[in-house]
Amino acid sequence: MRRIDLRTANVARSNTVREINRQIVLNFVREKGPISRADIARETRLQRSTVSLIVDELKKCRLIKEVEGESSGGRPPALLTLQSADPVAIGIDIGTAKTSVATCDLTGRAIAKEVFWTDPDADTTSKLIIESIERLIAGRGKSIEGVGISLPALVDTSRGQILYNPHLKWHNPDIIEKIRSATGLPVTVDNDANAAALAELWFGRPEVQDIRDFILVFIENGIGTGVVLDGQIYRGKGGVAGEFGHMTLGADAPVTCSNGNNDCWEAFASEQSALARYAKRLGNPQYASRITFVELIGLAYEDDENAMAALKETARYIGVGMGNLIQGLCPEAIILGGTIAKAWPLIADEIKSVANGGVCHGISSTRIIPSTLGPDPTLLGAFSLVLANKFSSIPV
Image 1: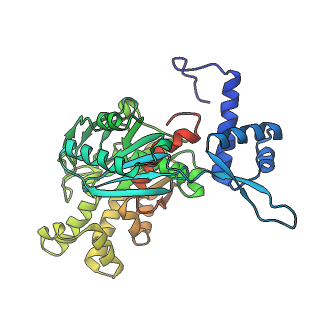
Image 2: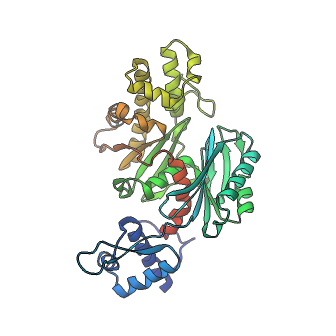
Image 3: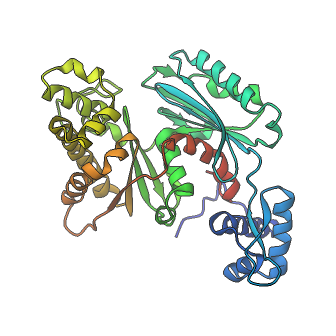
């Protein structure tokens, strides 16, 4: 049972019950729609009159709409589904190489999108983002309710501050303030792993949405982890929990991590470490900068022995790190995200055997699965930072 925090607790009033019922009905429409009023009343055990009042309110707020179902001989039934015509959120994914800015509807579907190279100068990147937002919402900005930003950085979500981006060497950039001032919209920011974990929670495969405790391991240039406990992102003191990518794993890794160390999980198991292993096997260390990780995966699928060996060794270290997470947190599942998920059929057995094989006897094995969020998980995560607050009575 969760202990009540008396510093922030509010007593239940009549409008509290109404708001909870409203969120329940809205989420039934989101997850099971198209759905009828009668089915919602039956599954929630709310009075049909109560459901109808809530539905009318949600329709008035343009959150849901009615569509015709298939007729079984008589009048077609009226079914409820999410309103998906208007953009409701702006998502910004600031990557180390490229930045994506997009609008989305209530379902998380991207409506319009722009992509440009991330400038190493934070002020220039801020300017480019604001210009992109202005183009995307021209004439359609009235329905936008907020901006979500995802990036590989230490972030204090509660204060809406980017603390440090090790890849671009940004220290406390004022990107958030500039976007908030330029748009007049509320802005929510989080690191890319947390944002992608939130997207898994709200938009992932059904079996993930039903899991209350899981860890997303997001691997690209670095390694980030998004920890979900009891259906919520765990951020810890200052919002910087989950930096397992920098836990010590050994010594003399193939590359250094974003903080310049060669002994952490990121240094042993990131994309760059796999590329370095491949280049070393070719006897040409410089080759690591001439090939992309996607190309390395492609070579492995074409039965290139050196590419396969580099991926397998990297997978072994991914498994070692996951084993530590299982040992310490015992999650129901670990989800592997990032470009490396494309190589899942090649590396799944290695990761699973190492991860679960190293934990103490008596600890149940943890299911390890690849992400199914598609090509833009962190952009969907940026959308989720805004959308989750619409579908949850507890702010993210």
